[in-house]
Length: 472
Image 1 (cartoon, rainbow, N blue to C red):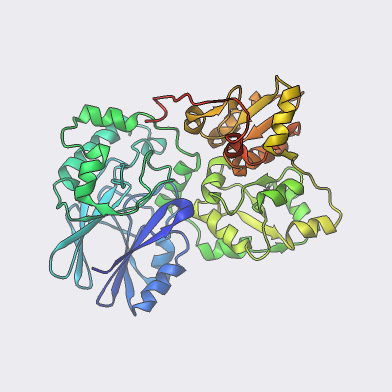
Image 2: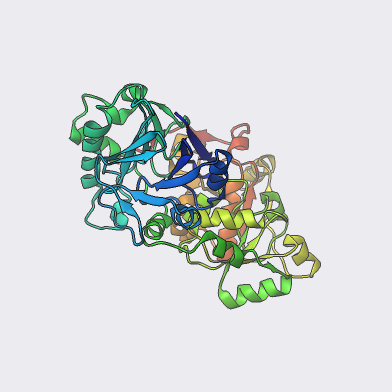
């Protein structure tokens, strides 16, 4: 059976391409749709359907642009109420893609409209299931996202639905079916997903904690809800965009891909209240950046961090990017709903410097220098911005955990009248944290380059205390 996984690592996202006899279908596409269109052209195929497993929270789907550009029919599962023209399928309804069949299995739990698509080949043999966020490799979808959009859908109610969906719709299927999930490790849509992105259903029945045959509903709900951290703030906003609709990516790219001189860039920042988002390498940012700009490096988990730290997807944004990568930035921001990019600094930061504009720096020291400082400054304030689970596993004794995921909740904890030190695992997140603090007028900080990785090879006192509830 011709089914291909199209995986995007920075979002831990998997879309799927299905083709038979000149007809194609796309499942859960990302915002930029040209790669799917080009893929179908390679097979001389017409995209007939865009199947959505649910209204996604962690990205804005490309279903509307695919429909606009190819005429494909958008299909959702039962109970979905999209704010645009789409087919809402019935449970067990069958769609034909060439000689293949796609059967709708309504599997509520992650959300109420969540649907699994059973793939059947030209001989009538069941091949695999595209599970969306219902079933991952090693995990299942978190059941607490929909309540941020519909308040009476509690996480307990959704977990109960998910238990029934797994037992009544998924687990009775054949062990040889291939499981094709929407996400892999690194996604915030689950808590303990495998790095593997496909598996057989039979193997998942053996190793996935949520598919234990002897598990009661009460045990399932307890285990599923234990250890869940609050979802990123942009998740409910992305859900609403996927439900109600959004602007075409072509419009967003045209608006955002405007080169601005340093003078025009400065005027735009002052007049619009835009965030200046600097996505260059962290060492470039620390040695020179526009005052009050926010750093989120393009070569890290860029879009998820932008979503977690910028509260409103409608926030105007101005970009400082490596030359030639500006359109990539706009595209990756739009994947998580940030559609209000107003332009970019033409010539990048070097143009700003050449224009003799004011700029700022982040003071950064290596771990050896930090150790020397501690020998003279025993009461130094040290802030660890890694996740709580990382901190609880092992951390520097005396360091205070202020996770970057929820950094805006911790700003008041940083001293205003004495120098303090910030670190993460390797340096990416600590520079993000430093930029946020400096944008708030807190400049009495020093970044520890190399982070905890380098600390583990030093003489610093570390603890290996593990918190059981966090590490589940």
